[in-house]
Length: 150
Length: 370
Image (cartoon, rainbow over all chains, first blue to last red):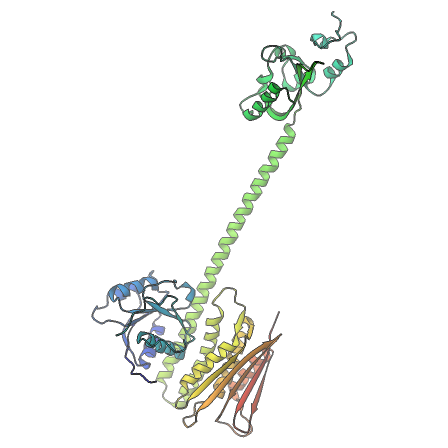
């Protein structure tokens, strides 16, 4: 029942700083590690390559012109094994097929809902696919591109 | 003066004013209907007679008409296909009835309702062609004007439809934008509360903040689920209640709480969603109070609908509530929230405690079907 939990390295991309801080704390409370917190595509490009994220939580609507979709592509091109999860108020804007996409967390989220979603994502990345999908997480329709964990 | 001969040869004698002309000729001569007669047995089928009305219509005098083929009435606007159909009819010895654009001597065009028919002798040989004309410019003009006006109206309508469509799209974009901003703002409120909670020094403050957060989260959840589509008018209160219950189960420190769901389709109108969402949240928070020494508990959530009524039932075993013997339902702010919001949503809330320590709460919701 209780498998050893691997700590995930998570990249946060969110331009509302209070929400970003909130997400960072939820991540840490759940026992994972924040690689970095970026507000834009430019920030992501400036990150060092050495610190590899397992997962990126990306807000779909960012200030400064670029969208979450572009940021996701940039992350995947730098770190091809990184899983992408969009955090968005409008799940319908998420495209049917997106390279590396695990799913979406809806806004507004609750702390418990976000935590439950993180738990489920962690299970997915560890190869555990059973278990109920938490209400605040919408899995991507195509899971063929899910990165596997050794 | 030559006497009018009573045979098929018509001559200028038709214009003979004095003496008796044959009545037929007199009729043709004097009628208001423009008429001509042509002789196909002469080269190029020339006009051999044209009455006064024809001369008035076309502006040509008799001397300018006799001996000419009537094609001189055609002009640049004349439809060639119509002309060809008349020519074909004449060649085949048939009648022709066409509307043709012709031109007067002064160059002005007019629409001519032309009727041509052959005149045969007793042997069946065509001796002459008889043609009547009528100026129908007014009618054609009216038809044209109606078509043009119709085209203008249709263009206007198309433009209006396109404008309206753009307006609806703009409105939808705005709605999405506002909706997105509201959702971001609600997330922010939750985030700020969590910041305060983390900084809270004492347990009482922490508990109050957690309670506030659960209320904000409840409305956020309603909002998140409700406005997925533009035209969502129904809210699944059963699934929502199970969601709240599951969240509470995860957070109940120390004790193990199992949630069981028995849900039938139970939807309420969107207008009642926020209020009843908050009521359900208050009730469940009260029922599932975290007690470190509490033993395993089970929370049953059931939902069903019949007609205009929706019924939600929550039942928890081993309630272990912080309460006196007499009152096991909430008091204070929680009680006010439940009572007022339930009342405004045409909902009755019934609390029942069994001797075995089970607590059951039943909500009877009357759906606002207006």
